Image (cartoon, rainbow, N blue to C red; front, top):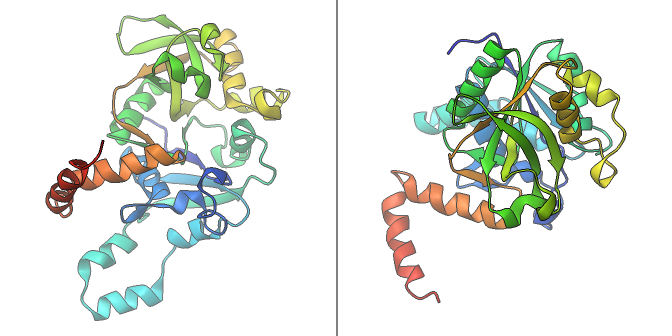
Length: 297
């Protein structure tokens, strides 16, 4: 599926307070999921879906993100001398042939505020938005399908996932109408972290968006919303209710596994499940895990 969308924006400015003290001096996006930092999975997903112009929105004390995706000539020299081709490829091919940029958010005033920092980079084009905490199985396939819908419908597209009713207050919840496809819904509104009884559906946004550039004008006119922040969900709600602002808004429902690495339990699940599926680690790890879990109550 070929589209004209080439740019991705990845917000990574959060303070990571849920992972203190580990994140006191290290960005939460650099916490390892086995042997790669969480943010690398997201960057690889963007690249795998055909996006080759990436903007990371960072903040104070996030220099490690730039260092990770930069060349390390000294380390490359050592690995070359050791003829360690595998490790050399791992550190040199992450962002090969990719145009990578960084901008600081400054004041942490919400996701919508972070997205506004990307306006110059986006330069009036549709773009993908990938939240840095979310690792999604087959995320590149999901994103490619979203970009195709956005391209053909001239619309914004949001990845949706059905969650238990008790979890609705944690997410932005979509008010949807069916289409001819059982996986694609029209979105007529959004509610940020509603009370369970007020939620319009059980379909929530889970960190992948393809947005039309008109979203910036909508964001600029927003007053602070939930938590005193500029909420992207408020902009999406306005866009869904008035398609003259930035075109229609669709939701693509998926059932791929998703890990929120900003949540401790989900972070641990990601490590255990992904380790168990790796060819180099899985056999030994799963053998140990079965033995260990026998003693659990």
